[in-house]
Image (cartoon, rainbow, N blue to C red; front, side, top):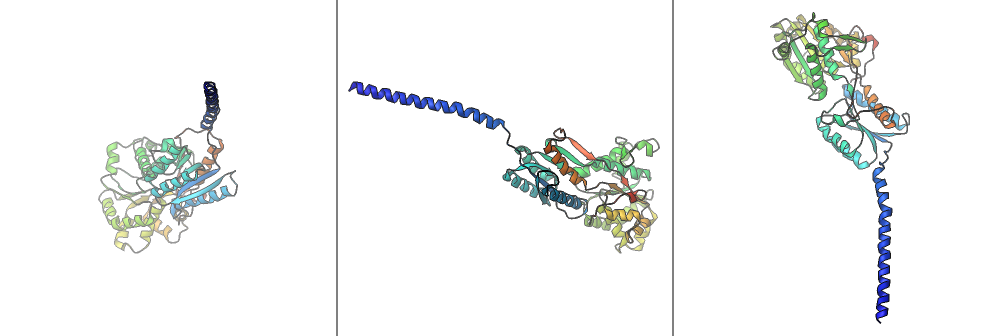
Length: 395
């Protein structure tokens, strides 16, 4: 009996040993497989996402329309073996929700992200956390820009520099009356304001990308730059500024409420009025208000008696038509009330360039540095060179 128990015990021990050996064997086989899975990056799909503002009107509307056209070309196979989805939004919070949808799809090779406003930071951060490559376009959000594959837009600093150069060459002084139509509170407007002031201080030069020429503040201001006190005087004493949200209608409301005050300020100093407008839509608003019966002949007569120069940024065909003298209604208005009018060339076709840069990144055709910046050159378009350019349809 004792022998039988010993035999049974031996069998059980052998069985237990075999099981233990098999278990150990399994562990040795599965560990390398797990390590390989961790080391091998999950292959990117061929799905890209293009996120833009809503294609409503003006520069942003046209930029979004160009994006939609490029997405269609991608899905026709014109730009390689990719498929694309176009997300549009009116605000950053909606874009944050769109990013969550993108993440849930688990198929994103990359994203071209044109933020509607600063709140889109959350969506950009979510892409960073998920390890999805993305390009920051137009509205550069500073808190996330160092983690973008590329930060790409028109050169907003140079847009402001170009405006300052133009107004200085036409006689703006620290005593002049300055009206500023600001776009919004984003880096776009901040950089344009910074560029404007830096040119006056001699800290930035105007690079005329059209003619490949450089102009310094000293070149156009009798060899001198302004002091910080002079810049502060221009931007405080006879200074009027309003955030128009890039809106033609909001700019009209501001003009309708304040034009007499601007005229009185200009009359009290040197009878000059300079307009630093950050967008064609807002400059067009000024022309449109003067073309109707909003103001009586007395106000219009006082404005006509002043020396007035106005800038813009964009390149709308409607603005170019005014500059060419082709707009039967507004070209005469510009001739009557403004000694000079210009628009800094800032073409929305660059939206397609931003998408192409994402495709180039995915194809590995250019070396990139995380957080790098690339900005399209800008230059002044006025009556002297406008016939060389075709603008985009802004309305």
